[in-house]
Image 1: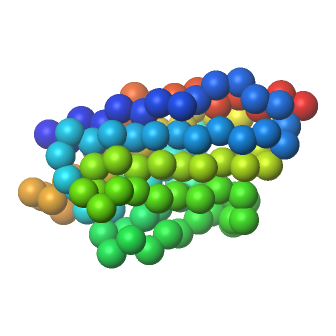
Image 2: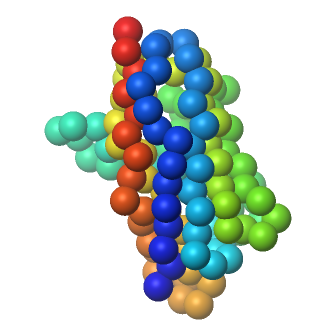
Length: 115
């Protein structure tokens, strides 16, 4: 089982920046970030594929940047020009190399953007 630990959340004013990190317990294939605001469904925000292509939700394009290290263990989400609507719990997910059908999620880190 892949374990994921997120960090880097916090409270920031609108227009500010935060950098989220996610550390996996082993090398994985695809990784990404989802977020869930109160009363809303979880949505995918950004994905980095096994061949390191970045895919973004339209609402964060140009503001968020996803990246990871060459070992495919640590992933980052640089979030700039944050807006109040970015407020949510952010969750890291990863695809196992042992079973590509298995997706694991972390426990989440809270991001709050004040106006």
